[in-house]
Image 1 (cartoon, one colour):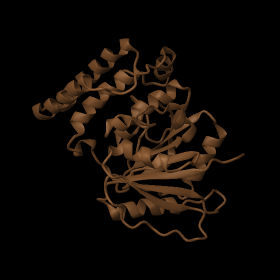
Image 2 (cartoon, rainbow, N blue to C red):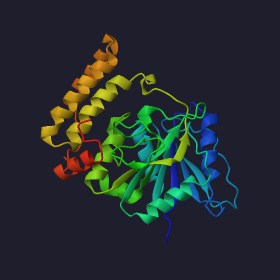
Image 3 (spheres, rainbow, N blue to C red):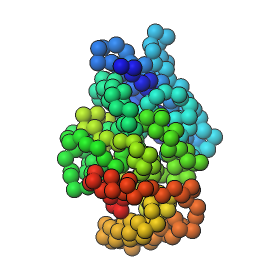
Image 4 (cartoon, one colour):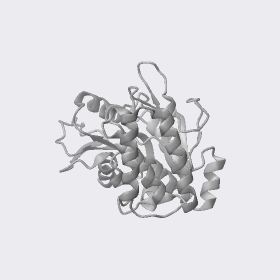
Length: 304
Protein backbone atom coordinates (compact mmCIF):
# COMPACT_ATOMS: atom_id res chain seq x y z
CA UNK A 1 0.00 0.00 0.00
CA UNK A 2 1.44 3.36 -1.07
CA UNK A 3 1.27 5.79 1.83
CA UNK A 4 0.58 9.50 1.21
CA UNK A 5 3.12 12.21 1.95
CA UNK A 6 2.38 14.58 4.82
CA UNK A 7 2.86 18.27 5.51
CA UNK A 8 1.82 20.30 8.55
CA UNK A 9 0.59 23.89 8.31
CA UNK A 10 0.79 26.11 11.38
CA UNK A 11 -0.18 29.79 11.17
CA UNK A 12 0.86 32.23 13.87
CA UNK A 13 0.50 35.86 14.89
CA UNK A 14 3.85 35.68 16.64
CA UNK A 15 2.36 36.00 20.13
CA UNK A 16 3.27 32.54 21.46
CA UNK A 17 6.86 31.57 20.53
CA UNK A 18 7.22 28.90 23.27
CA UNK A 19 3.91 27.29 22.36
CA UNK A 20 4.78 27.41 18.65
CA UNK A 21 8.10 25.69 19.35
CA UNK A 22 6.25 22.98 21.27
CA UNK A 23 3.82 22.47 18.37
CA UNK A 24 6.63 22.15 15.83
CA UNK A 25 8.54 19.83 18.16
CA UNK A 26 5.58 17.47 18.42
CA UNK A 27 5.46 17.27 14.62
CA UNK A 28 9.20 16.62 14.32
CA UNK A 29 8.85 13.85 16.92
CA UNK A 30 6.45 11.86 14.73
CA UNK A 31 7.38 8.27 13.98
CA UNK A 32 5.98 5.46 11.89
CA UNK A 33 4.29 2.55 13.60
CA UNK A 34 7.54 0.64 12.93
CA UNK A 35 9.57 3.20 14.88
CA UNK A 36 11.25 5.03 11.97
CA UNK A 37 11.23 8.82 11.68
CA UNK A 38 8.21 10.04 9.75
CA UNK A 39 8.96 12.54 7.00
CA UNK A 40 6.80 15.64 7.54
CA UNK A 41 7.20 18.99 5.84
CA UNK A 42 6.23 21.70 8.34
CA UNK A 43 5.16 25.07 6.95
CA UNK A 44 4.94 27.88 9.50
CA UNK A 45 3.04 30.94 8.27
CA UNK A 46 3.59 34.35 9.84
CA UNK A 47 0.19 36.00 9.35
CA UNK A 48 1.34 39.56 8.73
CA UNK A 49 4.15 39.26 11.30
CA UNK A 50 7.83 38.27 11.22
CA UNK A 51 8.41 34.68 12.20
CA UNK A 52 10.45 33.78 15.27
CA UNK A 53 13.48 31.55 14.82
CA UNK A 54 12.39 28.14 13.60
CA UNK A 55 14.08 24.96 14.81
CA UNK A 56 16.98 23.62 12.80
CA UNK A 57 16.36 20.11 11.56
CA UNK A 58 19.37 17.76 11.44
CA UNK A 59 20.58 16.98 7.93
CA UNK A 60 19.92 13.30 8.60
CA UNK A 61 16.23 13.92 9.34
CA UNK A 62 13.66 13.19 6.61
CA UNK A 63 11.60 16.17 7.84
CA UNK A 64 11.96 19.85 6.96
CA UNK A 65 10.69 23.08 8.51
CA UNK A 66 10.34 26.33 6.61
CA UNK A 67 8.48 29.58 6.99
CA UNK A 68 6.22 31.83 4.94
CA UNK A 69 5.88 35.47 6.02
CA UNK A 70 2.77 37.20 4.70
CA UNK A 71 3.05 40.98 4.19
CA UNK A 72 -0.36 41.51 5.80
CA UNK A 73 -2.72 39.68 8.13
CA UNK A 74 -5.02 37.57 5.95
CA UNK A 75 -6.95 36.01 8.81
CA UNK A 76 -6.94 32.36 9.76
CA UNK A 77 -8.23 30.82 6.50
CA UNK A 78 -6.07 33.07 4.34
CA UNK A 79 -2.93 32.19 6.28
CA UNK A 80 -3.73 28.49 6.15
CA UNK A 81 -4.36 28.74 2.42
CA UNK A 82 -0.87 30.24 2.03
CA UNK A 83 0.60 27.32 3.96
CA UNK A 84 -1.33 24.80 1.88
CA UNK A 85 -0.05 26.44 -1.31
CA UNK A 86 3.56 26.28 -0.05
CA UNK A 87 3.57 22.48 -0.04
CA UNK A 88 2.67 19.71 -2.46
CA UNK A 89 2.17 16.89 0.07
CA UNK A 90 -0.80 14.55 -0.34
CA UNK A 91 -2.13 15.28 3.16
CA UNK A 92 -2.23 18.62 4.97
CA UNK A 93 -2.25 18.53 8.77
CA UNK A 94 -3.52 21.84 10.18
CA UNK A 95 -2.66 22.66 13.79
CA UNK A 96 -3.21 25.72 15.96
CA UNK A 97 0.08 27.25 17.07
CA UNK A 98 -0.70 26.46 20.73
CA UNK A 99 -1.80 22.87 20.14
CA UNK A 100 0.47 19.84 20.00
CA UNK A 101 0.44 16.12 19.25
CA UNK A 102 1.07 13.99 22.35
CA UNK A 103 1.14 10.73 20.38
CA UNK A 104 4.25 10.27 18.23
CA UNK A 105 2.56 7.76 15.89
CA UNK A 106 -0.69 9.57 15.26
CA UNK A 107 0.16 11.01 11.84
CA UNK A 108 1.35 7.66 10.51
CA UNK A 109 -1.87 6.00 11.64
CA UNK A 110 -3.89 8.77 10.03
CA UNK A 111 -2.10 8.56 6.70
CA UNK A 112 -2.83 4.82 6.68
CA UNK A 113 -6.52 5.62 7.10
CA UNK A 114 -6.39 7.93 4.09
CA UNK A 115 -4.49 5.34 2.05
CA UNK A 116 -7.12 2.70 2.83
CA UNK A 117 -10.08 4.89 1.82
CA UNK A 118 -9.71 7.05 -1.30
CA UNK A 119 -12.98 8.89 -0.50
CA UNK A 120 -11.83 10.00 2.96
CA UNK A 121 -11.36 13.74 2.53
CA UNK A 122 -11.09 15.14 6.07
CA UNK A 123 -10.28 13.80 9.52
CA UNK A 124 -11.09 15.91 12.56
CA UNK A 125 -8.85 15.27 15.58
CA UNK A 126 -10.07 15.08 19.17
CA UNK A 127 -9.04 18.21 21.08
CA UNK A 128 -8.08 17.53 24.70
CA UNK A 129 -7.38 20.04 27.45
CA UNK A 130 -4.02 18.86 28.89
CA UNK A 131 -4.90 20.19 32.34
CA UNK A 132 -8.13 18.25 32.78
CA UNK A 133 -7.97 15.56 30.11
CA UNK A 134 -11.42 16.61 28.90
CA UNK A 135 -12.81 17.60 25.50
CA UNK A 136 -15.07 20.65 25.34
CA UNK A 137 -18.59 19.92 24.08
CA UNK A 138 -18.18 22.37 21.19
CA UNK A 139 -15.27 20.28 19.90
CA UNK A 140 -17.40 17.14 19.42
CA UNK A 141 -18.80 17.61 15.89
CA UNK A 142 -22.15 15.90 16.45
CA UNK A 143 -25.60 17.01 17.55
CA UNK A 144 -27.08 15.43 20.65
CA UNK A 145 -24.02 13.33 21.38
CA UNK A 146 -21.44 14.66 23.80
CA UNK A 147 -19.36 11.47 23.94
CA UNK A 148 -15.89 12.60 22.77
CA UNK A 149 -14.56 9.04 22.74
CA UNK A 150 -16.82 7.80 19.94
CA UNK A 151 -15.46 8.03 16.40
CA UNK A 152 -17.88 8.46 13.51
CA UNK A 153 -18.54 10.06 10.16
CA UNK A 154 -19.58 13.69 10.68
CA UNK A 155 -20.57 16.78 8.70
CA UNK A 156 -18.20 19.39 10.18
CA UNK A 157 -14.64 19.44 11.52
CA UNK A 158 -12.24 21.44 13.69
CA UNK A 159 -10.13 23.75 11.53
CA UNK A 160 -7.16 23.93 13.90
CA UNK A 161 -6.94 20.18 14.47
CA UNK A 162 -7.54 18.32 11.24
CA UNK A 163 -6.04 16.45 8.30
CA UNK A 164 -7.12 17.43 4.79
CA UNK A 165 -6.57 15.43 1.61
CA UNK A 166 -5.04 17.66 -1.05
CA UNK A 167 -7.12 16.09 -3.82
CA UNK A 168 -10.23 17.13 -1.86
CA UNK A 169 -8.88 20.66 -1.39
CA UNK A 170 -8.14 20.98 -5.09
CA UNK A 171 -11.54 19.63 -6.09
CA UNK A 172 -13.44 21.92 -3.70
CA UNK A 173 -11.44 25.14 -4.08
CA UNK A 174 -13.24 28.37 -4.96
CA UNK A 175 -11.81 31.75 -6.00
CA UNK A 176 -11.03 32.68 -2.37
CA UNK A 177 -9.15 29.42 -1.79
CA UNK A 178 -9.82 25.91 -0.52
CA UNK A 179 -10.64 27.57 2.80
CA UNK A 180 -12.86 30.65 2.39
CA UNK A 181 -10.23 33.37 2.63
CA UNK A 182 -12.74 36.21 2.77
CA UNK A 183 -14.23 34.81 5.99
CA UNK A 184 -11.15 35.91 8.03
CA UNK A 185 -12.33 34.03 11.12
CA UNK A 186 -15.14 31.57 11.68
CA UNK A 187 -17.26 29.15 9.60
CA UNK A 188 -14.60 28.53 6.96
CA UNK A 189 -14.59 24.91 8.16
CA UNK A 190 -18.37 24.62 7.68
CA UNK A 191 -18.02 26.12 4.21
CA UNK A 192 -15.37 23.57 3.19
CA UNK A 193 -17.14 20.67 4.89
CA UNK A 194 -20.37 21.30 3.00
CA UNK A 195 -18.50 21.56 -0.31
CA UNK A 196 -16.57 18.37 0.41
CA UNK A 197 -19.70 16.40 1.30
CA UNK A 198 -21.45 17.67 -1.82
CA UNK A 199 -18.50 16.43 -3.90
CA UNK A 200 -18.76 12.95 -2.37
CA UNK A 201 -15.93 13.05 0.20
CA UNK A 202 -16.19 11.57 3.69
CA UNK A 203 -15.46 13.53 6.88
CA UNK A 204 -14.51 11.52 9.96
CA UNK A 205 -14.08 12.44 13.62
CA UNK A 206 -11.30 10.23 14.99
CA UNK A 207 -11.46 10.06 18.77
CA UNK A 208 -8.12 8.21 18.91
CA UNK A 209 -6.26 11.03 17.13
CA UNK A 210 -5.58 13.60 19.85
CA UNK A 211 -4.32 17.16 19.79
CA UNK A 212 -3.65 18.78 23.17
CA UNK A 213 -4.92 22.35 23.43
CA UNK A 214 -5.79 24.53 26.45
CA UNK A 215 -9.53 24.99 26.94
CA UNK A 216 -10.65 28.36 25.52
CA UNK A 217 -13.75 30.25 24.37
CA UNK A 218 -14.06 31.53 20.79
CA UNK A 219 -15.71 34.67 22.19
CA UNK A 220 -12.29 35.76 23.49
CA UNK A 221 -11.68 37.33 20.05
CA UNK A 222 -12.95 40.92 19.89
CA UNK A 223 -14.54 40.46 16.46
CA UNK A 224 -16.10 37.08 17.22
CA UNK A 225 -19.78 38.05 17.41
CA UNK A 226 -19.72 40.20 14.26
CA UNK A 227 -17.80 37.70 12.16
CA UNK A 228 -19.80 34.79 13.55
CA UNK A 229 -23.01 36.36 12.25
CA UNK A 230 -21.65 37.71 8.97
CA UNK A 231 -19.96 34.45 8.03
CA UNK A 232 -23.00 32.38 8.96
CA UNK A 233 -25.01 34.40 6.44
CA UNK A 234 -22.23 34.02 3.89
CA UNK A 235 -21.93 30.24 4.31
CA UNK A 236 -25.69 29.90 3.78
CA UNK A 237 -25.72 32.16 0.73
CA UNK A 238 -22.76 30.31 -0.81
CA UNK A 239 -23.85 26.74 -0.22
CA UNK A 240 -27.50 26.11 0.69
CA UNK A 241 -30.45 25.54 -1.63
CA UNK A 242 -32.52 28.74 -1.66
CA UNK A 243 -35.38 27.15 0.30
CA UNK A 244 -33.06 26.30 3.21
CA UNK A 245 -31.37 29.68 3.57
CA UNK A 246 -34.16 31.32 5.64
CA UNK A 247 -34.64 28.13 7.68
CA UNK A 248 -30.94 27.89 8.57
CA UNK A 249 -30.56 31.56 9.37
CA UNK A 250 -33.86 31.78 11.23
CA UNK A 251 -32.95 28.86 13.50
CA UNK A 252 -29.50 30.25 14.22
CA UNK A 253 -30.87 33.71 14.95
CA UNK A 254 -33.20 32.18 17.54
CA UNK A 255 -30.35 30.14 19.01
CA UNK A 256 -28.08 33.17 19.34
CA UNK A 257 -30.80 35.30 20.94
CA UNK A 258 -31.26 32.58 23.58
CA UNK A 259 -27.53 32.09 24.06
CA UNK A 260 -26.41 35.71 24.26
CA UNK A 261 -29.33 37.47 25.96
CA UNK A 262 -27.22 40.53 26.85
CA UNK A 263 -27.88 43.59 24.69
CA UNK A 264 -24.28 44.49 23.76
CA UNK A 265 -23.23 41.17 22.15
CA UNK A 266 -26.65 40.87 20.47
CA UNK A 267 -26.26 44.31 18.87
CA UNK A 268 -22.84 43.29 17.56
CA UNK A 269 -24.18 39.97 16.30
CA UNK A 270 -27.10 41.56 14.45
CA UNK A 271 -24.76 44.14 12.90
CA UNK A 272 -22.73 41.26 11.50
CA UNK A 273 -25.92 39.54 10.32
CA UNK A 274 -26.92 42.62 8.33
CA UNK A 275 -23.37 42.91 6.96
CA UNK A 276 -23.65 39.35 5.69
CA UNK A 277 -26.60 40.33 3.52
CA UNK A 278 -25.12 43.60 2.29
CA UNK A 279 -21.74 42.22 1.24
CA UNK A 280 -20.54 39.72 -1.35
CA UNK A 281 -20.20 36.18 0.06
CA UNK A 282 -18.27 34.87 -2.92
CA UNK A 283 -19.19 32.24 -5.49
CA UNK A 284 -22.59 30.63 -4.89
CA UNK A 285 -22.86 26.94 -5.68
CA UNK A 286 -25.79 25.37 -3.78
CA UNK A 287 -25.46 21.79 -2.62
CA UNK A 288 -27.62 19.05 -4.06
CA UNK A 289 -30.71 17.89 -2.20
CA UNK A 290 -29.13 14.43 -2.07
CA UNK A 291 -26.34 16.01 0.01
CA UNK A 292 -28.92 17.54 2.33
CA UNK A 293 -30.40 14.07 2.84
CA UNK A 294 -26.97 12.51 3.34
CA UNK A 295 -26.13 15.07 6.04
CA UNK A 296 -29.50 14.45 7.68
CA UNK A 297 -28.79 10.72 7.83
CA UNK A 298 -25.43 11.51 9.45
CA UNK A 299 -27.32 13.32 12.20
CA UNK A 300 -26.81 16.97 11.27
CA UNK A 301 -28.97 18.42 8.48
CA UNK A 302 -27.60 21.70 7.09
CA UNK A 303 -30.07 23.83 9.04
CA UNK A 304 -28.22 23.49 12.37
